[in-house]
Length: 188
Image: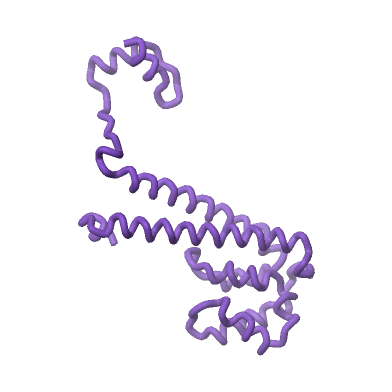
């Protein structure tokens, strides 16, 4: 019994005395522990928890980009961002982190250079031309591409892209793992 009391000595992060524990046991205010390995859900739990951690980290880094880096280096580009699940915006920012990196090229050179970076888009040429026109009067800081600040910006962008790849990998693994689950099929 002392081992049991010691094991249950802290509940919800607060110390409780043995009298309370004994009372809870007496009135059967207990929960049954289900071993995830025996229940066959350990892998699902790990995928879920890891996905949550990665999604949280991605949200944090995305906020850092949107609230710190973009306002300094290219505030006008935010309107082209689209949804938070796609990687093209971060790939684009990595290739063209400042308006000067765009306006150093002619419009045609920029469209050709950015064509594969942007991925599949409806009216891709129009989007790229709009981005070019947006970059021309930008109020972003005019830093050279080899500036330490831009290297840090690109490092943060790389981290965001890495988190997106990890999230996609976890979702593919979860799909493979749960593919035959009737509940999963109903929720898809």
